[in-house]
Image (cartoon, rainbow, N blue to C red; front, top):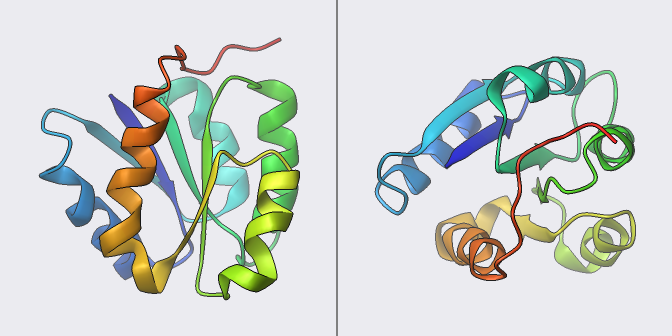
Length: 129
């Protein structure tokens, strides 16, 4: 399994990775600090899941999500944010995200969200249209 973590804060990327290492032994992790870097890494890292922060300098996570959905429509994206679920969860799902996870509850919600995606049985990995 390959997971691409995109967040503009290195400590958040590190924390998310630490949450996932034990739950997904053998997983490969790539990291991007902004949306443009994430888009550039998609083909190279071939992620099965993309974790994407909403609020980043430059292009927002919503803008990047739109591009990802167009270029790699089978790639599940989990949007992560410090913003409350009531403000963003439905908007993220309507925009094409597979899941929404609040960073404050990531330790309880992130692993189950990824397992739910894996258990769906859909084969992932980016592939241009």
